[in-house]
Length: 198
Image (cartoon, rainbow, N blue to C red; front, side, top):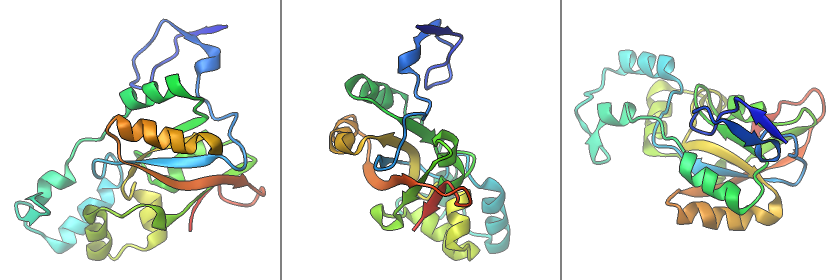
């Protein structure tokens, strides 16, 4: 069975896509693993808040920030994960994917989750990159707001069955990605948010 006019991960039109190959999140259920691929920087997240922080702190954008000028670090282009994810999909079933861009983890993950589940993300499962530490410190930004606005170092979330998680980490790492097992999928009550960072 095929659907016309679908799009691949890069957003380019493809003539025909096998419907069984479309990753739409419908198969996500309790017990599934959530993997996080490292971001290249702020991506398209939170630049209104970044501007406010810069206006208030007036840092030297040319100053060294962990080996690069701060201004360049702030404007690092959004990372696109097309090739490693397409390769992963050829190796195993991928249940869901969310590019963490235009909002933080708790805003982007729910886009791929069925209503009956939630993603529980462990904040201690990956190191917060220096850029986000600096933004939080200089902007006096609360943890909850950081998770809502910024990717905090996770640029793509991938949901796979728990039994495939280790193999998925190996495959993505072998493709050059930095990968963390950042959480799991749990059953959700109707009043609960669909993504929480604990």
